[in-house]
Length: 292
Image (cartoon, rainbow, N blue to C red; front, side):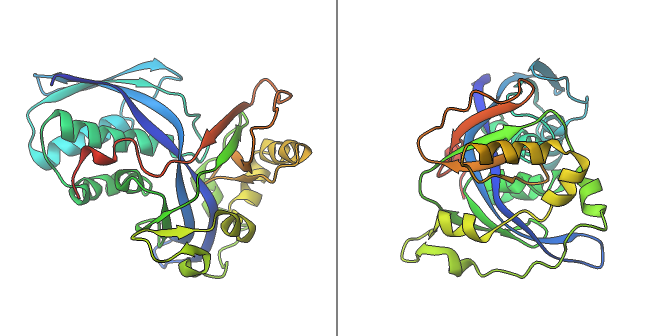
């Protein structure tokens, strides 16, 4: 096998994002549910015998030379001593600075695909250990399942949710994650929730959560600060409300989302906004590409 084509890197939504405290080292303690959705970047991989790692931006904005894809491939080479290289083609469909985890998902897909293409045979746990220094969200995509998230993002408990559809709206503006977390206006003391309080079924191997209970309970503590930095976040939420949809920001934004039933007619959004109707996924499309 010399190449892998059209390899997906799915986005995620934070169904809620609560900041429950802050450690002495400055890292914030979080609670969230990370959920995979079927809106994806696509990556293409071709082995290089010379050991070099290169990337081509096929569509979307040009990324920095040392983006997360390159760093992921180099980290995998360093961890395994693999002499092979790779040329990566990247089709960006997910917007940046959206809170959708696009860069982290691309990095995870690189690790999963190269583990297969290079014949390394690493387990999911071994890949997750390589992924963690790349960013707090990357191990989630390696884990490949909807998860209840705690700590600084490193404590993942796999859960399941009913099938559902969501509309995601991204305005052109962005907000810097570091700037949000440094803001004195950020609420850092939201009360800690108990995972079992959202259980719909505790008899299955993977705990099934009640989606509506989560949405009714949660909020995004980062949203007020992000709206100050990017007022378009509030405009997107107001626009969803005019369509009788309850929106909130995902991650550190600036994309917002709403749970929908039958896909509504959403044709009156400003032309500079990205509007995407998505479904959640039970597991990552590449979940079977490594062993536990």
